[in-house]
Amino acid sequence: MKTRWKWMLSLYAMWVCAGIGTGFAAEAEKRLKVVATTTMVADLARDLGGDRVDVAGLMGPGVDPHLYKATAGDLRRMQRADLILYNGLHLEGKLQEAIERSTGSGRKIKAVTDRIPKDRLLEAEGAVDPHVWFDVSLWILCAEAATEAFKELDPAGSPYYEERLQSVRARLTALHEWCKAQAKDVSPEQRILITSHDAFSYFGRAYGFKVIGLQGISTVTEAGLADVTRLTDFVKTNKVKAVFVETSVSPAAMRRIQKDSGARLGGELFSDATGSRGEMKDGYDLGTVEGMIRHNMNTIVRALK
Ligand SMILES: [Zn+2]
View 1 (cartoon, rainbow, N blue to C red):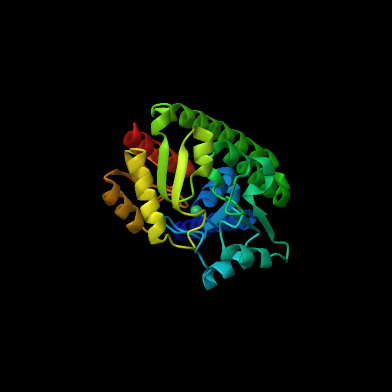
View 2: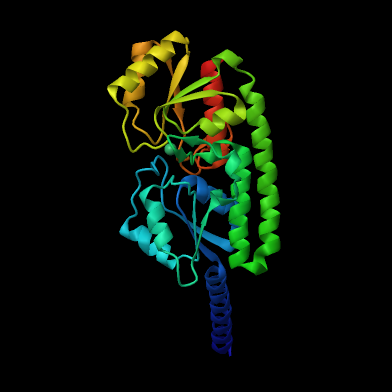
C-alpha cells in the first residue's frame, strides 16, 4: 500500500513539474525576440519591453558603433529575431546596411530615432549627427518609437507597453531636468566640453555647453597632427580647465593635447556605449543610459567648475 502511494505521489509530482516546465517554455516562446544594436538601444528595449521581450544586444560596453561590423553570430541572431531595433542616422555605419537587408519573413526593423522631427536633428560635415541620446528629451521620442514597434508586433501587450512607457518617460523627464540643474554649477564661460570625437553636440545644445570633438561625428577618419595642434592652442587660449577621453575611442591623441596644453584630464566619458550592466557608481547602474548620463554629467561638472 505504502509503495503504491509513493508511486502515485511521484507520478503526480512529475505531472506538475512537466506542466510548469511547458508553461515556462510557452511563456518564453511567446516573448518577442528583439535584437538591439548598441548598449543604449538594448537598455531602452529592456526598460520598455519588460517581461514580454527577450533582448539580445549585439554590441558590448566600450564598443564603437561607427566601426562595428556584424559577426556571423549577429547575422544569425538577426535572422531569428521578430524585431531589430537600431539607432539609425548611420550611427551603426556598415551594420545599418546589413540590418536594412535583413527584413522579410515577418521580421520588423525599427530605427528608434525615426520619430525625431528633422528640425530637432543636428547636422555636421554634411551628415545628420546620430548621437541623440545625450539630449534626454530626444531619447524620450526614441522610447516612443520603440514602444510603437512592440505594440505593432504584440498587440495583446499594448496596455503593458504603454504603462512601461509612462514610467520610462517620467524617469527620463526627471533626468533631463537634473541635467539642466547640474550644468548650472559650471559658470557659462567654463562650459566648454572637449572630447575625443563629436558625440556631444546634442548634450551641448540641451544643457548649454560649447562642444569640440577632436575627431568628427564619426570615428572612421582619425585626427591628424594639425587637428591636435589646433585643439591644443584652443585649450590654452581659452584656459579650458580639463579635457575628456571616451570609453569607446582610443585616448592617445586626447592625452597628447592634455599634456601639451597643461589642462587636466577631466576623466573618462561614456560616449557611444554604456558601461557594464550591474556596475554601480554613485547609486546608478553604469550599464544604463541613465547611469551613463549621470556619470558623464558628474564627471564634467566636477572637472570644469
Ligand atoms: Zn560617435
